[in-house]
Length: 237
Ligand code: UDP
Image (cartoon, rainbow, N blue to C red):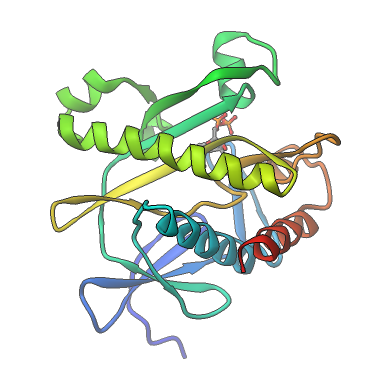
């Protein structure tokens, strides 16, 4: 019987309470959704892969000076995290054009930007996470000017670290989404960093190694998550 007390269940993860009110257990599910939850499925092994990948990337970032909510990986599907208060602003960093950016602005896929683009989205499922700018964040009091500056600065530093890391294992980091939380007044990187929240294109072959395989029915979905887990682990551990 599962006696853990559930605090919150999202599309891909469940948060449980622990004996320590400052610490939560983050469980990674195999459930997958896309297009605002319209497409649903199960990707066997995704939970294990995303937990392992996120744990390794949070460790790598910590070694390079970016702290996060990550405390420890405690099982195949579970990590302990600090109990942060999530800021309802998602930050997307883009190095190469694809996805909603191409649809919104009518530009071609695959343009490598001279400088990364940082976008802000309002984290609200009912409103379909609309794009917003700094002024909206401040006017809606979602974060202070200082907090927003910290989040944008950290997002760019995460990008620089991860871009170099993925480059070293033959992968282009195309774009990714980050979430931050507040913990004792401090902004902390939170959520996950995985093929669900990043786009990875293999250098040379241009093979997609992320959730686009599920979104676009490209096949080999399970295999791809496991491959990414292994390629990252081989380099980090
Ligand atoms: N992303 C995410 N969660 C979201 C929206 C986007 O993790 O709710 C990630 C997505 O996996 C990609 C990046 O953010 O790595 C940019 O996504 P985009 O805006 O292009 O979204 P899409 O084309 O999927 O609508």
